[in-house]
Image 1: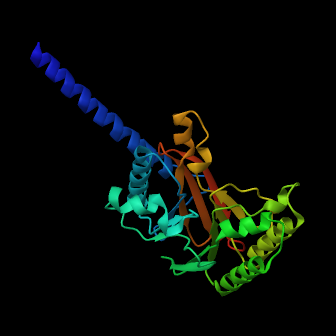
Image 2: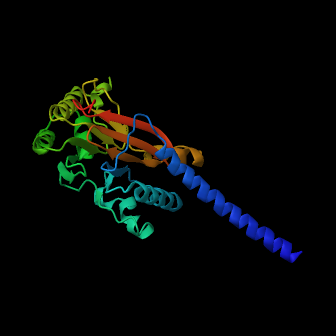
Image 3: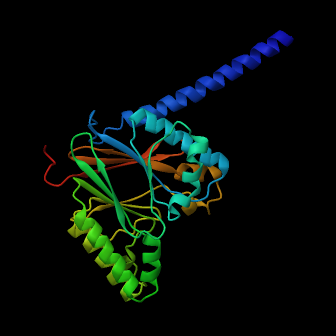
Length: 285
């Protein structure tokens, strides 16, 4: 009887291990089999975008381990964090503790640095410019209803950084949507500043804006794409833990010469959305 019980326990443990393995394998297959116009090549650049903020330790650990597996599978080169806390964000600080093998550069905002860019060389001889904007302070000034000197200075600094950007692809990263002018009850000064922000990014060829707190996108079809990173803090009010896990996650980006593909991956490893941005003038190449 004891031998039978012992054998049953071993069988159950092996079955559980097999289930976990299969679920992870299928999770990777869902990424590999996502067509949607996706023609991945050996010279494509992969990287990850993730939001910061508080997460229960178990969920944080789960997220980092999933990022680690995806990064290893797709040979991701770096991680972009949209957290307004920058280098002091909890997820970034705990990365080396939880995922010791995920030794990738983390690019994020820097306190008091304003706008700045990271220039990344790509495998196909092109380059990618990632421009970070201190959207937290800019958003507060916008909503205060006064177009002050500090706000004007920040917009001029952003213009200078984007003007210097010479990458084939250009993305802007911030923690706020900065499209306040789409809100009918917003101050006129805020609407004007938001319009200026959008005009600057369009003028200097920004392909994508990655935001942590949503995209109230008032952009027209000639503008850039706005994508929201799955955000744990935005879903803190949900009462159902499984819903919070479905909404939490990260973005996996694949960049080629002619297209920029973004997969939204939830905490279960499922691809819940795919966005494709075509490089203007290179659609048929």
